[in-house]
Length: 202
Image 1 (cartoon, rainbow, N blue to C red):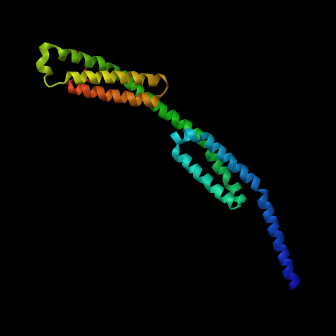
Image 2 (tube, rainbow, N blue to C red):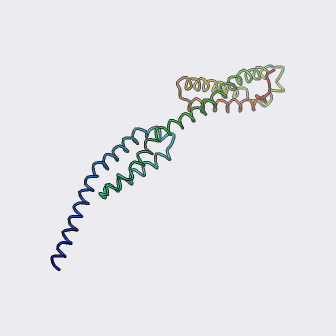
Image 3 (spheres, rainbow, N blue to C red):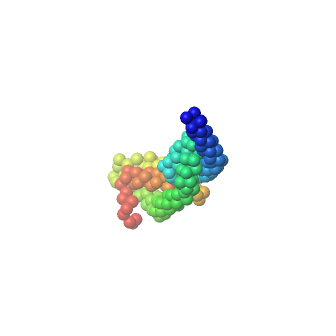
């Protein structure tokens, strides 16, 4: 009976050693997989954070889970689960590039529209200002602050130059944001001088 128990213990010990050896043999592959995922995420993180932040957070979370499993010495589970996470990490750069192209196209379309309309607002407003400044049109200009309108136009002109410089430098976000601000300022001026910018110029 004792010999049987001893044999069972020896068998169990042998199996444990085999399992430990097998597990230890997967430590290096598990470690390499985690390192590969980390390197891939790091390389893509800057663009991914801008354009596909949700995907980046998801991959970072899965990487954190793998590290926790690795710390528990469950290397087999890491080796099994890591390839899928690595694949998602490798997709970050592609997804970010695609989203960036989409965003830049939208910004370019916005800029094209603004560049086609905003410059035409300046002469239309200036012509209206010249009309209102004439002594013969004092009644029409009554209640209109021409000095404030002139200052607003000068400010809008300065901003438009800034928008054009941003566009020339390839900073589409700034170009579109500034051009949109210019458009709003000019529309506000037009409203104060009772000018319909949508109407064809006389």
